[in-house]
Length: 227
Image 1 (spheres, rainbow, N blue to C red):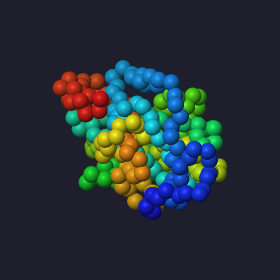
Image 2 (cartoon, one colour):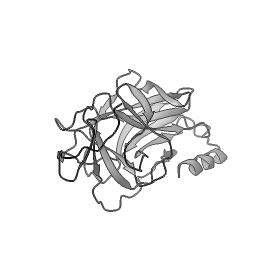
Image 3 (tube, rainbow, N blue to C red):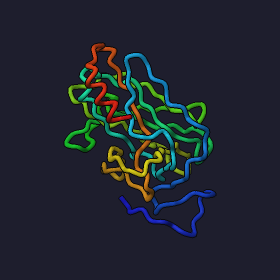
Image 4 (tube, rainbow, N blue to C red):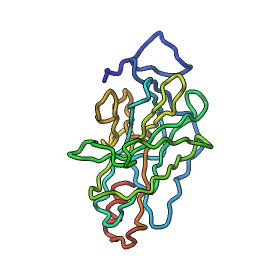
Protein backbone atom coordinates (compact mmCIF):
# COMPACT_ATOMS: atom_id res chain seq x y z
CA UNK A 1 0.00 0.00 0.00
CA UNK A 2 1.23 3.49 -0.76
CA UNK A 3 2.49 5.49 2.19
CA UNK A 4 0.12 8.18 3.40
CA UNK A 5 1.54 11.63 2.64
CA UNK A 6 0.03 15.06 2.90
CA UNK A 7 -0.75 16.53 -0.49
CA UNK A 8 -0.66 20.30 -0.65
CA UNK A 9 -2.06 22.57 -3.30
CA UNK A 10 -4.88 20.17 -4.13
CA UNK A 11 -8.43 20.92 -3.05
CA UNK A 12 -11.06 18.27 -3.64
CA UNK A 13 -13.61 19.50 -1.15
CA UNK A 14 -13.77 22.20 1.47
CA UNK A 15 -11.96 21.34 4.72
CA UNK A 16 -10.99 17.87 3.52
CA UNK A 17 -7.50 16.49 3.86
CA UNK A 18 -6.12 14.34 1.06
CA UNK A 19 -3.52 11.63 1.64
CA UNK A 20 -1.43 10.56 -1.35
CA UNK A 21 -3.53 8.93 -4.05
CA UNK A 22 -5.28 6.53 -1.74
CA UNK A 23 -7.71 7.98 0.75
CA UNK A 24 -9.63 11.15 1.61
CA UNK A 25 -10.15 12.07 5.26
CA UNK A 26 -12.54 14.54 6.84
CA UNK A 27 -13.33 15.50 10.42
CA UNK A 28 -16.61 13.87 11.44
CA UNK A 29 -19.25 16.62 11.64
CA UNK A 30 -20.35 17.80 15.04
CA UNK A 31 -23.40 15.83 16.06
CA UNK A 32 -25.88 15.57 18.89
CA UNK A 33 -25.32 12.87 21.46
CA UNK A 34 -25.67 9.47 19.82
CA UNK A 35 -27.40 7.17 22.31
CA UNK A 36 -26.06 3.70 22.79
CA UNK A 37 -27.68 1.31 20.36
CA UNK A 38 -30.37 -0.88 21.89
CA UNK A 39 -29.72 -4.45 22.93
CA UNK A 40 -32.04 -7.40 22.56
CA UNK A 41 -33.14 -10.31 24.74
CA UNK A 42 -30.48 -13.04 24.93
CA UNK A 43 -27.96 -10.92 23.04
CA UNK A 44 -24.78 -8.99 23.72
CA UNK A 45 -23.08 -6.17 21.83
CA UNK A 46 -19.34 -6.50 21.22
CA UNK A 47 -17.38 -3.33 20.53
CA UNK A 48 -14.00 -1.63 20.73
CA UNK A 49 -15.02 1.99 20.08
CA UNK A 50 -16.09 4.66 22.58
CA UNK A 51 -19.22 5.64 20.68
CA UNK A 52 -17.86 9.11 19.79
CA UNK A 53 -16.56 9.68 16.25
CA UNK A 54 -13.66 11.90 15.20
CA UNK A 55 -12.63 11.14 11.59
CA UNK A 56 -14.19 9.57 8.53
CA UNK A 57 -12.37 8.06 5.57
CA UNK A 58 -13.02 6.95 1.99
CA UNK A 59 -10.63 5.33 -0.44
CA UNK A 60 -10.52 6.46 -4.05
CA UNK A 61 -10.92 2.83 -5.11
CA UNK A 62 -13.80 1.17 -3.29
CA UNK A 63 -13.86 -2.35 -4.70
CA UNK A 64 -11.62 -4.58 -2.61
CA UNK A 65 -11.10 -1.90 0.07
CA UNK A 66 -12.17 -3.21 3.48
CA UNK A 67 -12.03 -2.15 7.12
CA UNK A 68 -13.05 -4.33 10.05
CA UNK A 69 -12.73 -5.25 13.71
CA UNK A 70 -11.73 -8.61 15.14
CA UNK A 71 -13.70 -10.19 18.00
CA UNK A 72 -13.31 -13.26 20.19
CA UNK A 73 -16.30 -15.03 21.74
CA UNK A 74 -14.45 -18.04 23.12
CA UNK A 75 -15.12 -16.90 26.70
CA UNK A 76 -18.87 -16.81 26.09
CA UNK A 77 -19.63 -20.45 26.30
CA UNK A 78 -22.80 -20.71 24.22
CA UNK A 79 -22.85 -17.54 22.12
CA UNK A 80 -22.56 -19.07 18.68
CA UNK A 81 -24.63 -16.75 16.53
CA UNK A 82 -23.97 -13.35 15.00
CA UNK A 83 -27.30 -11.56 14.92
CA UNK A 84 -26.42 -8.08 13.67
CA UNK A 85 -23.63 -6.14 11.99
CA UNK A 86 -23.53 -2.58 13.40
CA UNK A 87 -21.52 0.39 12.12
CA UNK A 88 -21.24 4.18 12.02
CA UNK A 89 -21.06 6.11 8.76
CA UNK A 90 -22.05 9.55 7.48
CA UNK A 91 -23.78 11.26 4.55
CA UNK A 92 -20.40 12.35 3.20
CA UNK A 93 -18.90 13.33 0.84
CA UNK A 94 -21.94 13.49 -1.49
CA UNK A 95 -24.77 14.00 1.03
CA UNK A 96 -26.43 10.66 0.28
CA UNK A 97 -26.20 6.99 1.19
CA UNK A 98 -24.51 4.91 -1.49
CA UNK A 99 -24.31 1.46 0.11
CA UNK A 100 -21.44 -0.92 0.84
CA UNK A 101 -20.83 -4.64 1.37
CA UNK A 102 -20.31 -6.56 4.61
CA UNK A 103 -18.83 -9.93 5.50
CA UNK A 104 -17.52 -12.08 8.34
CA UNK A 105 -13.98 -13.42 8.03
CA UNK A 106 -12.11 -16.13 9.90
CA UNK A 107 -9.24 -15.09 12.17
CA UNK A 108 -6.42 -17.61 11.96
CA UNK A 109 -2.96 -17.12 13.37
CA UNK A 110 -3.90 -13.64 14.54
CA UNK A 111 -4.70 -12.26 11.06
CA UNK A 112 -7.89 -12.21 8.93
CA UNK A 113 -8.32 -15.17 6.62
CA UNK A 114 -11.08 -16.40 4.33
CA UNK A 115 -14.67 -15.15 4.26
CA UNK A 116 -17.01 -17.33 6.33
CA UNK A 117 -20.24 -15.38 5.80
CA UNK A 118 -22.04 -15.03 3.49
CA UNK A 119 -21.35 -18.70 2.91
CA UNK A 120 -21.58 -18.11 -0.85
CA UNK A 121 -18.32 -16.18 -0.61
CA UNK A 122 -19.95 -13.06 -2.05
CA UNK A 123 -20.23 -10.13 0.41
CA UNK A 124 -23.71 -8.90 1.29
CA UNK A 125 -24.60 -5.51 -0.20
CA UNK A 126 -26.38 -3.25 2.30
CA UNK A 127 -27.96 0.19 1.88
CA UNK A 128 -28.16 2.53 4.89
CA UNK A 129 -31.22 4.69 5.40
CA UNK A 130 -32.41 7.41 7.73
CA UNK A 131 -30.30 9.70 9.91
CA UNK A 132 -26.53 9.75 9.69
CA UNK A 133 -26.41 10.18 13.47
CA UNK A 134 -27.64 6.70 14.30
CA UNK A 135 -26.08 3.28 14.45
CA UNK A 136 -26.63 1.41 11.21
CA UNK A 137 -27.81 -2.17 11.79
CA UNK A 138 -27.79 -4.96 9.21
CA UNK A 139 -29.06 -8.49 9.72
CA UNK A 140 -26.58 -11.36 9.71
CA UNK A 141 -28.46 -14.21 11.44
CA UNK A 142 -25.68 -16.74 11.10
CA UNK A 143 -24.25 -19.28 13.53
CA UNK A 144 -20.47 -19.31 13.86
CA UNK A 145 -18.72 -22.59 13.04
CA UNK A 146 -16.29 -24.17 15.50
CA UNK A 147 -13.91 -21.19 15.48
CA UNK A 148 -15.01 -18.37 17.78
CA UNK A 149 -12.60 -15.69 16.59
CA UNK A 150 -13.73 -13.64 13.63
CA UNK A 151 -13.48 -10.33 11.80
CA UNK A 152 -16.57 -8.22 11.04
CA UNK A 153 -15.76 -6.02 8.05
CA UNK A 154 -17.20 -3.73 5.40
CA UNK A 155 -16.09 -3.09 1.85
CA UNK A 156 -16.44 0.46 0.57
CA UNK A 157 -17.36 -1.04 -2.84
CA UNK A 158 -17.98 2.23 -4.77
CA UNK A 159 -15.30 4.70 -5.83
CA UNK A 160 -14.68 8.24 -4.66
CA UNK A 161 -15.60 10.80 -5.90
CA UNK A 162 -17.83 9.17 -8.51
CA UNK A 163 -20.33 7.65 -8.02
CA UNK A 164 -19.65 8.30 -4.31
CA UNK A 165 -19.10 6.07 -1.30
CA UNK A 166 -20.07 5.79 2.37
CA UNK A 167 -17.11 6.37 4.72
CA UNK A 168 -15.90 4.34 7.66
CA UNK A 169 -15.40 6.15 10.99
CA UNK A 170 -12.91 5.96 13.83
CA UNK A 171 -13.63 6.91 17.45
CA UNK A 172 -12.01 9.48 19.76
CA UNK A 173 -9.73 7.11 21.66
CA UNK A 174 -6.08 8.06 21.09
CA UNK A 175 -5.04 4.60 22.32
CA UNK A 176 -4.86 2.10 19.47
CA UNK A 177 -6.54 -1.05 20.81
CA UNK A 178 -5.05 -3.07 17.92
CA UNK A 179 -8.27 -4.74 16.84
CA UNK A 180 -9.01 -2.77 13.65
CA UNK A 181 -7.84 -3.98 10.23
CA UNK A 182 -7.80 -2.82 6.64
CA UNK A 183 -7.59 -4.73 3.37
CA UNK A 184 -6.22 -2.65 0.52
CA UNK A 185 -4.24 -3.56 -2.58
CA UNK A 186 -4.61 -7.23 -1.73
CA UNK A 187 -3.19 -7.23 1.82
CA UNK A 188 -4.73 -7.39 5.31
CA UNK A 189 -2.86 -5.23 7.81
CA UNK A 190 -3.62 -3.25 10.98
CA UNK A 191 -5.63 -0.11 10.23
CA UNK A 192 -3.40 2.76 9.12
CA UNK A 193 -3.91 6.50 8.91
CA UNK A 194 -2.06 9.69 9.72
CA UNK A 195 -4.28 10.38 12.72
CA UNK A 196 -3.95 9.22 16.32
CA UNK A 197 -7.30 7.50 16.10
CA UNK A 198 -7.30 3.95 14.77
CA UNK A 199 -10.28 2.19 16.38
CA UNK A 200 -12.98 1.57 13.77
CA UNK A 201 -16.60 2.09 14.76
CA UNK A 202 -17.76 -1.40 13.81
CA UNK A 203 -19.63 -3.66 16.24
CA UNK A 204 -21.56 -6.92 16.26
CA UNK A 205 -24.47 -8.26 18.27
CA UNK A 206 -24.11 -11.92 19.14
CA UNK A 207 -26.94 -14.11 20.36
CA UNK A 208 -27.50 -17.31 22.26
CA UNK A 209 -30.99 -18.02 21.02
CA UNK A 210 -29.88 -21.44 19.77
CA UNK A 211 -28.22 -22.18 23.13
CA UNK A 212 -30.05 -20.33 25.92
CA UNK A 213 -27.84 -21.38 28.85
CA UNK A 214 -25.05 -18.85 29.38
CA UNK A 215 -22.34 -19.17 31.97
CA UNK A 216 -22.52 -15.92 34.04
CA UNK A 217 -18.78 -15.77 34.74
CA UNK A 218 -18.02 -15.92 31.03
CA UNK A 219 -20.39 -13.08 30.26
CA UNK A 220 -18.69 -10.96 32.91
CA UNK A 221 -15.27 -11.54 31.39
CA UNK A 222 -16.44 -10.45 27.95
CA UNK A 223 -18.06 -7.31 29.39
CA UNK A 224 -14.71 -6.45 30.90
CA UNK A 225 -13.12 -6.82 27.49
CA UNK A 226 -15.58 -4.88 25.41
CA UNK A 227 -17.08 -2.24 27.73
